[in-house]
Length: 172
Image (cartoon, rainbow, N blue to C red; front, top):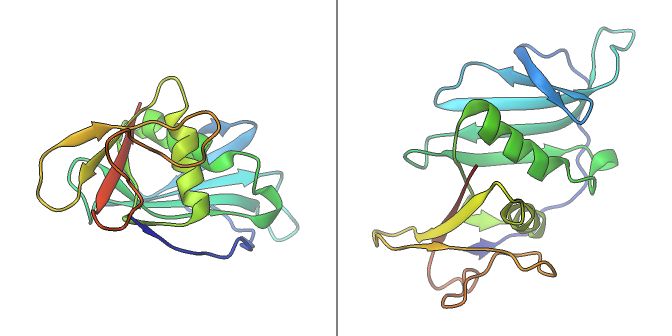
């Protein structure tokens, strides 16, 4: 697994969702753009419409099946800078898995924030997390995050050493 650096400053613009509202997450509306297929976008919106008829986008999650079989790859997760640090991303991941009945797979490159999100998910009671070699071997490992850690770990392998490439998946 490669570590990458990404800037934290994300400013999402207000927009009018084109998809359908599929529920609520901590008082915020969740919209699904398109049907559950090869590519899915979920938007989390907060507040009432402004004068232009647009609503504030708090978070945007883009998923696809392009890179994996039987799971959705997290292509991009964005949280508006004013709402970062409130735990929205792991809650949205779990919400997506429950609501859409899907398994999520992390990318082979992760930012520090991405690693933290996967560790937070692994700590949730109803979530199962596992890692598998990305290149052909069929062995998979159940992984976890210790309460004090912000990364996933396994006792016999180093998931972030960069020599072996692992894929992470999470299911509810």
